[in-house]
Image 1 (cartoon, rainbow, N blue to C red):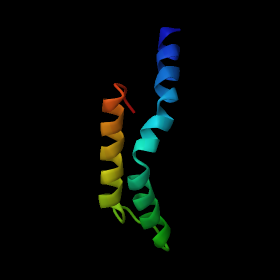
Image 2 (cartoon, rainbow, N blue to C red; image 1 turned 90 degrees about the horizontal axis):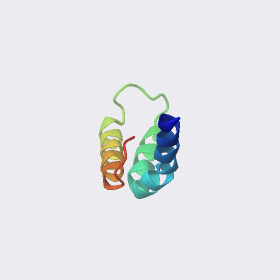
Image 3 (spheres, rainbow, N blue to C red; image 1 turned 90 degrees about the vertical axis):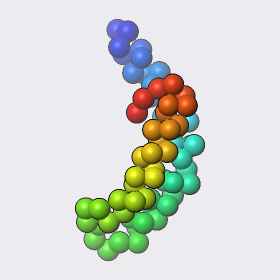
Image 4 (tube, rainbow, N blue to C red; image 1 turned 180 degrees about the vertical axis):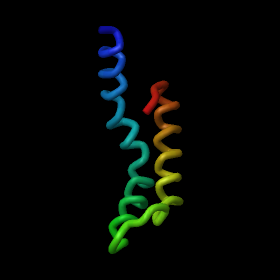
Length: 65
């Protein structure tokens, strides 16, 4: 049961993590929406920036994603 409690606590922090990366998520979403057909690595740079932000925000909140 302890693992379930930890998972719920971690999931409860997700909105905070995503809120800290709203700018990067908007840039990534904009890139994806501009494509007629999204192919692998079309928005790799934007995704990497978004993912790096998510990792930093999670580390700041002492959790993992």
